Length: 339
Image (cartoon, rainbow, N blue to C red; front, side, top):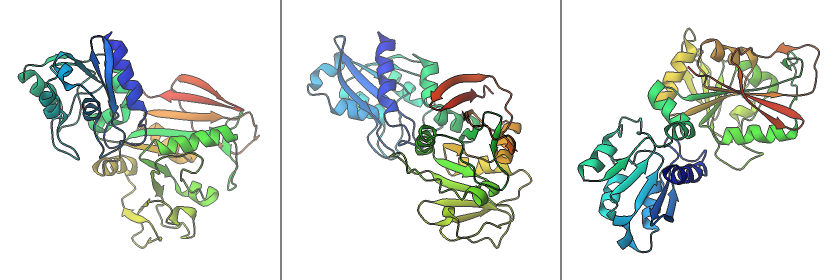
């Protein structure tokens, strides 16, 4: 039964995908006499935590000492945007808690479990640990690897090209395009290189899906991008990475960096800015650089039935396909990096 109730926590937590960063996605249920009497989830960053929402929704608080709290992550024990969840749990009278794995952040890191045990609570931890970690893979990667969770995304033709040289080329169908906008809404930042910005002039905004707008990042070593590009239109926050101290496009923050070790240094910079995840949308050179340096966690490749005959070759990824999905008329291939 414990796994059944923990899976309900995961279902609740997933409702807030794209809205909780830099916090994790968390769901909680309270069970009394074998049935759920309250539910809650962390809906958005700065809002009530899942445990708080669940506890505060209980009508008859007298049953809480005989109830069990289920939550997919270790309850927090520090003051942030909200007070510690452990304090509220103890005040509520709940003494039986079943959870997923420990919170990897330095503010918590097992201290929430320790506080609850010291207060006499009965804890069962690490239930569905792998499923819980997968749900919050961005949060775990951020704290354990000290960098954002990196998702690579590109579309390629059936014969392995991502476009024509110097020419904007639409490959994917409408379903895949809508899905790409959904993916943007679920990540903290979205990134392109100089050539993609010049040729495609993308907005990198969420227009075909309702959701969070990520930070737009564009790499321009020499500072040669025209200031009239959509990336500099002020419709969303933009970060320009360059070596040129004279690059000053409108409506953009400029970050001057040396390009010798650009990607590792950029990952460190984004970690310091608490950017939990990064969606890299191309082109081939930038994507291949992430692959070659092993700075990626997931790749989403949209394969169109269209054949281009020639053009820019798609990035090469040697990992086996993790899963395959139909996005008519396209096919979506998912790759996972186990390292």
